[in-house]
Image: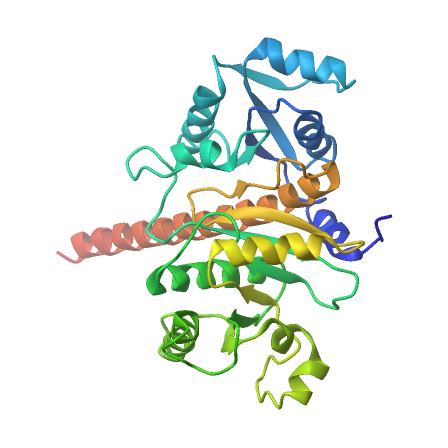
Length: 333
């Protein structure tokens, strides 16, 4: 039995007053995939573009009693073309987010990667799980458990910065970031401890901004105040981490799955650092998790809109100033 916890409800409620975003939903060919997209539409979060073979989408909807008549279907031949079309719609700014339906993550993400036709920006893309755990009193972000298999130091820096930016959007002003390893001391025998120490120094030098970093830390140091006290861990985030940074995707994925095995724990997923937010959950994720993941993407898209608006406004003011200076200069002449 799942236990109610307010974190996801709070995220979803923050989106109630926002305009819905257009979302490219790639291959919604399972019950949870199509129901998750339509639930998000009915909640006013998104305007879905259902991308896939039209007959198959209609058949899945009919089988599970999901009404899709009000929504646009983008008819394509197969899953591969669906993923490509979803990326194209986002590159054209027709859609403000990309959502995986029922594709394997590798197949879904493949068209996003090319620099010329994908969704990559300068920063490394990374995945983050936002975890709702009744036994943990804070919003918890775990990264990266899905995209970067064995990241190098510079890639880890991007992973950390992406997670910090997400924490800001979720309302965590100064997130506490734990760089995880097996021990709390730096050892040349454990490369992840060296990366952890380097990431902390990068934060000291302004290469990573907006959060408080510490590491290497073991999992219990970061999440259990009593464990940190007993082990005499002197850290500003001992036992109260907002972000857990795994050494690699393998350990990160196992950590998330272990969380999810506990009663009442759920994890919403999103890919960060791309041109648009990418909604990527487990293919077996229930509709509530898909709804929460979509709400997170909507908040991220809203932040991007505000930043673009601010840039456009700044450019407008600059052009007006130049025009005024040019006009007054001509008058003086």
